[in-house]
Image 1: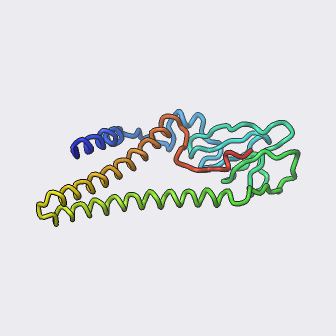
Image 2: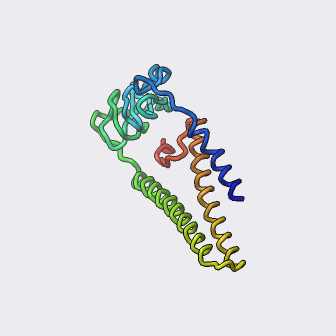
Image 3: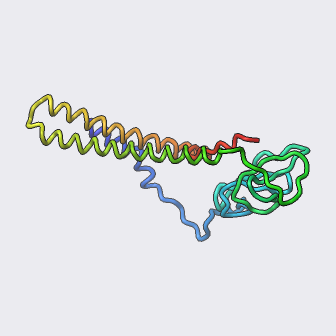
Length: 198
C-alpha cells in the first residue's frame, strides 16, 4: 500500500522536477516582451486614458480589465487620481469628473478581511502539515513500543496510514491549485474580495 502511495506522489511531482524552465537573457520571454506591462513591477491595478483599467500580472504581462462605463472615470482606491501613473492599489469606476488628488476610499475592512483569510489559511495549512508529521512520529513510536502485539501493531499501522494520507491530500490539493493556475492563468491561490466590487 505504501509503495502505491509513494509512486502516486512521484507521478505528480516528477514532471515538475524534470521539466526545465527556459532561461532568457532578459527577465521576460520574447512573447511577454511584446505585451510587457506598461508599468513593470506593479502587481495590482492602474488607470490609463481616463476610463481604461489594467491589472499587472507581474513584471512581464498585464491584462485589460473592463473599461469604466460612459459618465464615469477610472480612479485608484486610497490614492491620488491617476491617469497614466502607476499605483500599487486597486481601481474603481467613479461617477462624473473628480479633481486630481481626490481619493476614493475602499469599503471598510475589505483589505483586513483578505489579510485575515490569508493568515488563517497559512496557519491552518502549516498546522495540518505539523499535525501529520507528529502523527508519523507517534506511529513510529507505537511501532517501537508495540512489542509485537498484533493490536498495538495494527493501531500503529492505522495511525501511520492516516498521517501519510493527510500529507498526500495536502500535497495533491496544492498541486491541483497550481495546475489550474498554470493551465488557465486564473490565480486561484489569492483571495481578493475587492475584485468583485465595481
